[in-house]
Length: 411
Image 1 (cartoon, rainbow, N blue to C red):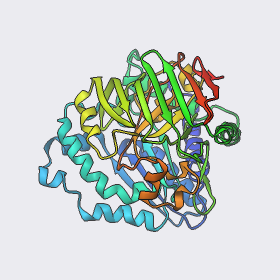
Image 2: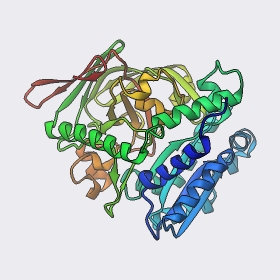
Image 3: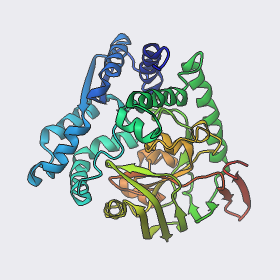
Protein backbone atom coordinates (compact mmCIF):
# COMPACT_ATOMS: atom_id res chain seq x y z
CA UNK A 1 0.00 0.00 0.00
CA UNK A 2 1.60 3.32 -1.06
CA UNK A 3 2.54 5.73 1.70
CA UNK A 4 -0.30 8.21 2.26
CA UNK A 5 0.40 11.83 1.25
CA UNK A 6 3.94 10.90 0.27
CA UNK A 7 4.53 13.82 -2.10
CA UNK A 8 3.27 16.32 0.47
CA UNK A 9 5.50 14.83 3.17
CA UNK A 10 8.51 14.77 0.84
CA UNK A 11 8.07 18.50 0.17
CA UNK A 12 7.81 19.17 3.91
CA UNK A 13 11.00 17.16 4.37
CA UNK A 14 12.84 19.21 1.75
CA UNK A 15 11.62 22.43 3.36
CA UNK A 16 12.79 21.18 6.76
CA UNK A 17 16.30 20.50 5.45
CA UNK A 18 16.50 23.96 3.92
CA UNK A 19 14.87 25.93 6.77
CA UNK A 20 15.91 24.09 9.95
CA UNK A 21 18.80 22.02 8.60
CA UNK A 22 20.93 24.84 7.17
CA UNK A 23 18.65 27.92 7.33
CA UNK A 24 19.19 29.13 3.76
CA UNK A 25 19.24 32.93 3.47
CA UNK A 26 19.34 35.28 0.44
CA UNK A 27 22.76 35.23 -1.22
CA UNK A 28 23.83 31.85 0.19
CA UNK A 29 25.77 29.23 -1.72
CA UNK A 30 24.29 25.78 -1.14
CA UNK A 31 25.71 22.42 -2.12
CA UNK A 32 23.71 19.23 -2.05
CA UNK A 33 25.18 15.72 -1.96
CA UNK A 34 22.58 13.16 -3.01
CA UNK A 35 22.17 9.89 -4.94
CA UNK A 36 20.80 9.89 -8.47
CA UNK A 37 17.83 7.73 -7.46
CA UNK A 38 16.74 10.49 -5.05
CA UNK A 39 16.26 13.04 -7.86
CA UNK A 40 12.66 13.93 -6.81
CA UNK A 41 13.91 14.97 -3.37
CA UNK A 42 16.89 16.77 -4.91
CA UNK A 43 14.60 18.86 -7.10
CA UNK A 44 12.47 19.84 -4.11
CA UNK A 45 15.53 20.84 -2.05
CA UNK A 46 17.04 22.88 -4.89
CA UNK A 47 13.70 24.62 -5.54
CA UNK A 48 13.24 25.41 -1.84
CA UNK A 49 16.77 26.84 -1.57
CA UNK A 50 16.28 29.12 -4.57
CA UNK A 51 12.86 30.20 -3.25
CA UNK A 52 14.62 31.41 -0.12
CA UNK A 53 17.08 33.47 -2.14
CA UNK A 54 20.10 31.20 -2.57
CA UNK A 55 22.58 32.65 -5.06
CA UNK A 56 23.77 29.22 -6.22
CA UNK A 57 22.87 25.60 -5.55
CA UNK A 58 25.39 22.97 -6.65
CA UNK A 59 24.40 19.31 -6.72
CA UNK A 60 26.97 16.54 -6.33
CA UNK A 61 25.39 13.30 -7.53
CA UNK A 62 26.38 9.80 -6.37
CA UNK A 63 25.43 6.26 -7.33
CA UNK A 64 26.03 3.03 -5.41
CA UNK A 65 26.67 0.93 -8.50
CA UNK A 66 29.18 3.36 -10.00
CA UNK A 67 30.94 3.64 -6.64
CA UNK A 68 31.21 -0.13 -6.39
CA UNK A 69 32.54 -0.41 -9.95
CA UNK A 70 35.16 2.27 -9.30
CA UNK A 71 36.28 0.63 -6.07
CA UNK A 72 36.52 -2.77 -7.75
CA UNK A 73 38.14 -1.86 -11.06
CA UNK A 74 39.74 1.59 -11.14
CA UNK A 75 43.52 1.50 -11.61
CA UNK A 76 45.27 1.97 -8.28
CA UNK A 77 47.32 4.94 -9.48
CA UNK A 78 44.02 6.71 -10.20
CA UNK A 79 41.97 5.43 -7.27
CA UNK A 80 44.60 6.36 -4.68
CA UNK A 81 45.36 9.79 -6.19
CA UNK A 82 42.45 12.20 -5.95
CA UNK A 83 42.42 14.63 -8.93
CA UNK A 84 43.15 18.29 -8.11
CA UNK A 85 39.74 19.40 -9.41
CA UNK A 86 38.06 17.41 -6.61
CA UNK A 87 39.99 19.31 -3.94
CA UNK A 88 39.31 22.50 -5.91
CA UNK A 89 35.59 21.87 -5.59
CA UNK A 90 35.90 21.35 -1.83
CA UNK A 91 37.95 24.56 -1.54
CA UNK A 92 35.30 26.46 -3.53
CA UNK A 93 32.63 25.44 -1.05
CA UNK A 94 34.76 26.51 1.93
CA UNK A 95 35.71 29.82 0.28
CA UNK A 96 32.04 30.59 -0.39
CA UNK A 97 30.91 29.45 3.10
CA UNK A 98 28.56 27.08 1.33
CA UNK A 99 25.73 25.52 3.31
CA UNK A 100 26.03 21.75 2.91
CA UNK A 101 23.07 19.37 2.73
CA UNK A 102 24.01 15.69 2.61
CA UNK A 103 21.32 13.11 1.85
CA UNK A 104 22.37 9.55 2.68
CA UNK A 105 20.59 6.56 1.16
CA UNK A 106 23.30 4.01 0.28
CA UNK A 107 23.07 0.27 0.68
CA UNK A 108 24.94 -0.45 3.96
CA UNK A 109 26.55 -3.47 2.27
CA UNK A 110 27.39 -1.70 -0.98
CA UNK A 111 31.13 -2.38 -0.77
CA UNK A 112 30.99 -5.62 1.20
CA UNK A 113 32.74 -7.58 -1.57
CA UNK A 114 35.56 -5.06 -2.03
CA UNK A 115 39.02 -5.64 -0.53
CA UNK A 116 39.09 -3.65 2.75
CA UNK A 117 42.71 -2.61 2.14
CA UNK A 118 41.74 -1.08 -1.21
CA UNK A 119 38.94 0.88 0.45
CA UNK A 120 41.27 2.01 3.24
CA UNK A 121 43.88 3.28 0.77
CA UNK A 122 41.23 5.20 -1.16
CA UNK A 123 39.80 6.60 2.06
CA UNK A 124 43.25 7.82 3.12
CA UNK A 125 43.76 9.64 -0.19
CA UNK A 126 40.25 11.10 -0.20
CA UNK A 127 40.60 12.32 3.39
CA UNK A 128 43.67 14.35 2.46
CA UNK A 129 41.79 16.07 -0.37
CA UNK A 130 38.80 16.57 1.93
CA UNK A 131 40.79 17.85 4.92
CA UNK A 132 40.12 21.58 4.55
CA UNK A 133 36.39 21.01 4.14
CA UNK A 134 36.36 18.60 7.10
CA UNK A 135 38.11 21.21 9.23
CA UNK A 136 35.45 23.75 8.24
CA UNK A 137 32.72 21.28 9.14
CA UNK A 138 34.23 20.19 12.47
CA UNK A 139 34.84 23.81 13.53
CA UNK A 140 31.31 24.81 12.46
CA UNK A 141 32.77 27.41 10.08
CA UNK A 142 30.07 26.40 7.61
CA UNK A 143 26.48 25.29 8.15
CA UNK A 144 25.71 21.66 7.38
CA UNK A 145 23.05 19.05 7.84
CA UNK A 146 22.75 15.33 7.17
CA UNK A 147 19.39 13.70 6.43
CA UNK A 148 18.36 10.29 5.15
CA UNK A 149 16.31 9.10 2.18
CA UNK A 150 14.89 5.62 1.67
CA UNK A 151 16.31 3.42 -1.07
CA UNK A 152 15.21 -0.16 -1.84
CA UNK A 153 18.57 -1.76 -0.97
CA UNK A 154 18.85 0.05 2.36
CA UNK A 155 15.15 -0.47 3.15
CA UNK A 156 15.33 -4.22 2.61
CA UNK A 157 18.24 -4.37 5.06
CA UNK A 158 16.12 -2.61 7.71
CA UNK A 159 12.90 -4.50 6.88
CA UNK A 160 13.92 -7.99 5.70
CA UNK A 161 10.36 -9.24 6.31
CA UNK A 162 8.87 -6.90 3.68
CA UNK A 163 7.18 -8.77 0.85
CA UNK A 164 8.44 -6.41 -1.87
CA UNK A 165 11.18 -3.78 -2.24
CA UNK A 166 8.47 -1.13 -2.55
CA UNK A 167 6.88 -2.17 0.75
CA UNK A 168 10.27 -1.99 2.46
CA UNK A 169 10.97 1.43 0.94
CA UNK A 170 7.59 2.79 2.04
CA UNK A 171 8.15 1.51 5.57
CA UNK A 172 11.59 3.12 5.72
CA UNK A 173 10.24 6.44 4.46
CA UNK A 174 7.56 6.25 7.15
CA UNK A 175 10.23 5.68 9.80
CA UNK A 176 12.37 8.54 8.45
CA UNK A 177 9.42 10.93 8.48
CA UNK A 178 8.58 9.92 12.05
CA UNK A 179 12.13 10.38 13.36
CA UNK A 180 12.33 13.84 11.76
CA UNK A 181 8.91 14.92 13.08
CA UNK A 182 7.33 15.22 9.64
CA UNK A 183 4.38 13.34 11.17
CA UNK A 184 3.76 16.29 13.53
CA UNK A 185 1.15 18.97 12.68
CA UNK A 186 3.91 21.61 12.50
CA UNK A 187 7.29 19.89 11.98
CA UNK A 188 9.36 23.09 12.18
CA UNK A 189 7.73 24.14 15.47
CA UNK A 190 8.25 20.61 16.83
CA UNK A 191 11.95 20.86 15.95
CA UNK A 192 12.32 24.19 17.73
CA UNK A 193 10.79 22.73 20.91
CA UNK A 194 13.05 19.68 20.69
CA UNK A 195 16.07 21.93 20.15
CA UNK A 196 15.31 23.79 23.38
CA UNK A 197 15.09 20.56 25.39
CA UNK A 198 18.45 19.29 24.15
CA UNK A 199 20.06 22.68 24.76
CA UNK A 200 18.83 22.65 28.37
CA UNK A 201 20.44 19.24 29.03
CA UNK A 202 23.70 20.40 27.45
CA UNK A 203 23.70 23.54 29.59
CA UNK A 204 23.26 21.51 32.80
CA UNK A 205 26.13 19.17 31.93
CA UNK A 206 28.41 22.08 31.02
CA UNK A 207 27.66 23.81 34.32
CA UNK A 208 28.47 20.63 36.27
CA UNK A 209 32.02 20.44 34.79
CA UNK A 210 32.54 16.77 35.61
CA UNK A 211 36.18 15.65 35.60
CA UNK A 212 35.31 12.12 34.49
CA UNK A 213 32.48 9.96 33.20
CA UNK A 214 32.23 6.34 34.35
CA UNK A 215 30.32 4.04 31.96
CA UNK A 216 29.03 0.73 33.34
CA UNK A 217 27.09 -1.93 31.40
CA UNK A 218 27.52 -5.61 30.48
CA UNK A 219 30.95 -5.81 28.82
CA UNK A 220 31.64 -2.12 29.43
CA UNK A 221 33.57 -0.57 32.30
CA UNK A 222 35.15 2.62 31.01
CA UNK A 223 36.36 5.81 32.68
CA UNK A 224 36.61 8.82 30.37
CA UNK A 225 38.35 12.00 31.47
CA UNK A 226 36.91 15.33 30.35
CA UNK A 227 38.96 18.45 29.51
CA UNK A 228 38.93 21.50 31.73
CA UNK A 229 36.35 24.06 30.59
CA UNK A 230 34.66 21.51 28.34
CA UNK A 231 31.37 22.40 26.69
CA UNK A 232 28.44 20.10 25.99
CA UNK A 233 26.35 20.65 22.88
CA UNK A 234 22.90 19.48 21.90
CA UNK A 235 20.37 20.47 19.27
CA UNK A 236 21.31 23.31 16.96
CA UNK A 237 24.77 24.79 16.39
CA UNK A 238 25.80 28.22 15.11
CA UNK A 239 28.15 29.25 12.32
CA UNK A 240 30.45 32.29 12.71
CA UNK A 241 27.70 34.54 11.33
CA UNK A 242 25.41 33.53 14.18
CA UNK A 243 23.10 31.47 11.97
CA UNK A 244 21.70 28.36 13.60
CA UNK A 245 21.75 25.01 11.82
CA UNK A 246 20.87 21.42 12.73
CA UNK A 247 23.84 19.21 11.83
CA UNK A 248 21.95 15.91 12.13
CA UNK A 249 18.28 15.33 11.43
CA UNK A 250 17.27 13.34 13.43
CA UNK A 251 19.22 14.18 16.59
CA UNK A 252 18.59 13.05 20.16
CA UNK A 253 22.09 13.54 21.57
CA UNK A 254 24.07 15.83 23.81
CA UNK A 255 27.81 15.51 23.33
CA UNK A 256 31.26 16.81 24.17
CA UNK A 257 34.89 15.83 23.61
CA UNK A 258 36.85 13.70 26.08
CA UNK A 259 40.41 14.34 27.18
CA UNK A 260 42.02 11.92 24.75
CA UNK A 261 44.87 11.22 27.22
CA UNK A 262 42.60 10.01 30.05
CA UNK A 263 40.52 7.07 28.83
CA UNK A 264 40.86 3.68 30.54
CA UNK A 265 38.89 0.45 30.54
CA UNK A 266 36.78 -1.56 28.14
CA UNK A 267 33.76 -0.78 25.98
CA UNK A 268 31.68 -2.95 23.64
CA UNK A 269 29.45 -1.87 20.79
CA UNK A 270 25.73 -2.56 20.98
CA UNK A 271 24.64 -1.88 17.39
CA UNK A 272 26.11 -2.57 13.95
CA UNK A 273 28.19 0.13 12.28
CA UNK A 274 28.07 0.78 8.55
CA UNK A 275 31.45 2.21 7.56
CA UNK A 276 32.75 2.70 4.01
CA UNK A 277 30.05 0.42 2.62
CA UNK A 278 30.79 -2.44 5.01
CA UNK A 279 29.13 -3.63 8.23
CA UNK A 280 31.04 -3.96 11.51
CA UNK A 281 29.46 -5.83 14.43
CA UNK A 282 30.49 -6.96 17.90
CA UNK A 283 33.26 -4.42 18.38
CA UNK A 284 35.29 -4.48 21.60
CA UNK A 285 37.88 -1.90 22.63
CA UNK A 286 40.35 -1.78 25.50
CA UNK A 287 41.82 1.64 26.32
CA UNK A 288 44.89 2.47 28.39
CA UNK A 289 46.07 6.04 28.96
CA UNK A 290 43.73 7.23 26.22
CA UNK A 291 44.78 4.80 23.49
CA UNK A 292 43.16 1.66 22.10
CA UNK A 293 45.57 -1.14 23.05
CA UNK A 294 43.31 -3.97 21.90
CA UNK A 295 40.36 -4.04 19.51
CA UNK A 296 38.33 -6.69 17.74
CA UNK A 297 35.14 -6.92 15.70
CA UNK A 298 33.18 -10.14 15.29
CA UNK A 299 32.31 -8.99 11.78
CA UNK A 300 34.43 -6.60 9.72
CA UNK A 301 37.56 -6.95 11.84
CA UNK A 302 39.87 -6.19 8.89
CA UNK A 303 37.95 -2.97 8.28
CA UNK A 304 38.27 -2.01 11.94
CA UNK A 305 42.00 -2.69 12.03
CA UNK A 306 42.52 -0.55 8.92
CA UNK A 307 40.50 2.25 10.50
CA UNK A 308 42.69 2.12 13.61
CA UNK A 309 45.78 2.70 11.46
CA UNK A 310 44.51 6.21 10.70
CA UNK A 311 46.44 8.84 12.70
CA UNK A 312 44.51 9.69 15.87
CA UNK A 313 41.92 6.93 15.40
CA UNK A 314 43.13 5.00 18.47
CA UNK A 315 41.63 7.59 20.78
CA UNK A 316 38.24 9.24 21.15
CA UNK A 317 37.07 12.60 19.85
CA UNK A 318 33.49 12.52 21.08
CA UNK A 319 31.31 11.12 23.85
CA UNK A 320 27.58 11.42 23.38
CA UNK A 321 24.60 10.74 25.64
CA UNK A 322 21.32 9.47 24.19
CA UNK A 323 18.56 8.11 26.46
CA UNK A 324 17.39 4.60 25.59
CA UNK A 325 13.73 5.76 25.61
CA UNK A 326 14.49 8.01 22.61
CA UNK A 327 11.94 7.59 19.79
CA UNK A 328 14.46 5.87 17.51
CA UNK A 329 15.48 3.38 20.19
CA UNK A 330 11.87 2.63 21.08
CA UNK A 331 11.05 1.94 17.44
CA UNK A 332 13.08 -1.25 17.85
CA UNK A 333 14.62 -0.75 14.42
CA UNK A 334 18.27 -1.13 13.52
CA UNK A 335 18.88 1.23 10.61
CA UNK A 336 22.41 0.07 9.75
CA UNK A 337 23.14 3.77 9.37
CA UNK A 338 25.00 5.86 11.93
CA UNK A 339 22.80 8.95 11.50
CA UNK A 340 19.86 7.00 12.91
CA UNK A 341 21.47 4.34 15.09
CA UNK A 342 23.63 6.87 16.96
CA UNK A 343 20.41 8.63 17.97
CA UNK A 344 19.08 5.43 19.48
CA UNK A 345 22.09 4.89 21.71
CA UNK A 346 24.91 6.43 23.67
CA UNK A 347 27.88 6.54 21.36
CA UNK A 348 31.52 7.52 21.08
CA UNK A 349 33.66 8.54 18.13
CA UNK A 350 37.13 7.40 17.23
CA UNK A 351 39.23 10.24 15.85
CA UNK A 352 38.77 13.98 15.53
CA UNK A 353 37.34 16.11 18.35
CA UNK A 354 35.18 19.12 17.63
CA UNK A 355 37.17 22.21 18.70
CA UNK A 356 34.08 23.97 20.06
CA UNK A 357 33.97 21.30 22.78
CA UNK A 358 36.25 23.40 25.01
CA UNK A 359 36.13 27.07 25.88
CA UNK A 360 37.97 29.16 23.26
CA UNK A 361 38.77 25.97 21.31
CA UNK A 362 37.77 27.59 18.03
CA UNK A 363 40.55 30.16 18.43
CA UNK A 364 43.23 27.56 19.23
CA UNK A 365 45.69 26.09 16.77
CA UNK A 366 46.11 22.32 16.46
CA UNK A 367 48.86 22.09 19.09
CA UNK A 368 46.89 24.18 21.58
CA UNK A 369 43.89 21.92 21.06
CA UNK A 370 46.02 18.85 21.76
CA UNK A 371 47.33 20.49 24.92
CA UNK A 372 43.71 21.11 25.97
CA UNK A 373 42.97 17.40 25.50
CA UNK A 374 41.23 17.48 22.11
CA UNK A 375 42.12 14.57 19.85
CA UNK A 376 43.41 15.45 16.37
CA UNK A 377 42.73 13.11 13.46
CA UNK A 378 41.63 13.18 9.82
CA UNK A 379 38.75 10.82 10.66
CA UNK A 380 35.70 10.81 12.93
CA UNK A 381 33.78 7.53 13.18
CA UNK A 382 30.92 7.01 15.63
CA UNK A 383 30.12 3.64 17.18
CA UNK A 384 27.12 2.83 19.34
CA UNK A 385 27.64 1.44 22.84
CA UNK A 386 24.53 2.40 24.83
CA UNK A 387 21.65 0.20 25.98
CA UNK A 388 18.84 -0.03 28.51
CA UNK A 389 21.46 -1.46 30.91
CA UNK A 390 23.83 1.51 30.72
CA UNK A 391 24.66 3.41 33.91
CA UNK A 392 26.80 6.54 33.74
CA UNK A 393 28.22 8.51 36.66
CA UNK A 394 29.70 11.97 36.54
CA UNK A 395 32.72 12.34 38.82
CA UNK A 396 33.59 15.81 40.10
CA UNK A 397 37.20 16.98 40.62
CA UNK A 398 36.74 16.42 44.39
CA UNK A 399 35.56 12.84 43.83
CA UNK A 400 31.84 13.51 44.28
CA UNK A 401 29.80 11.04 42.20
CA UNK A 402 26.63 12.27 40.50
CA UNK A 403 24.35 9.80 38.68
CA UNK A 404 23.74 10.91 35.08
CA UNK A 405 22.18 7.78 33.52
CA UNK A 406 20.47 4.87 35.22
CA UNK A 407 19.22 1.92 33.19
CA UNK A 408 19.77 3.78 29.95
CA UNK A 409 17.88 6.97 30.87
CA UNK A 410 18.54 10.26 32.59
CA UNK A 411 18.90 9.68 36.33
